Image 1 (tube, one colour):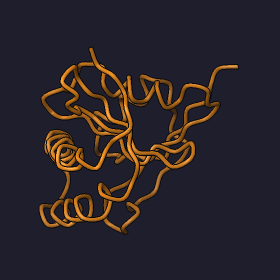
Image 2 (image 1 turned 120 degrees about the horizontal axis):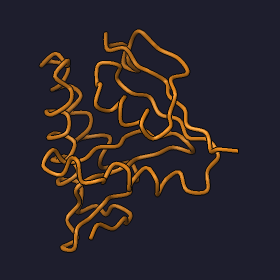
Image 3 (image 1 turned 30 degrees about the vertical axis):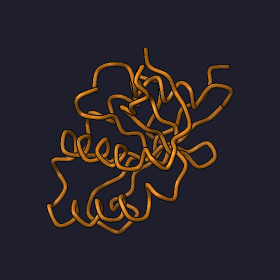
Image 4 (image 1 turned 90 degrees about the vertical axis):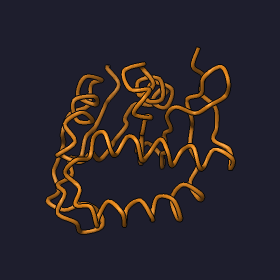
Amino acid sequence: MLLLRPARPDDTARNYEIWRTSVDATHHFLDPADREAIARMVMEDYLPNAEFTVAVDNDDLPHGFLGVTGNNIDSLFVHADSRGMGLGRLLLDGFRMGKDVVTVDVNEQNSAATGFYERLGFVVTGRAELDDQGRPYPILHMRWQKAA
């Protein structure tokens, strides 16, 4: 059985492994130098300083994590070995419970993520030619709204 809990500082190394395996499986479009720069930022700045919800197994081992700001999803990553188990949906459904609107930005070239969000009711509301670091990876702005 998989459960959600707040991440703890001792989850940081595992969350980095989750991020790395997920990116390896889905972000083939990244230039190797960009991937390394992003990896450094994720490990040194993002993971140690942000708050996350993790999806854990019966042994309390994280298999996915979700980071948010307000009603926006900043990050949602599932370990490559755990894909297809419903972890992304578990994390997303736990977050959007009680919310009327949720937004997320997704790399346009990450068709797995785009399809995931579309299957769960998100629609594209805009597009940016560059990512938030000014790199040439187009971003889709997506939005989910609770049914009336």
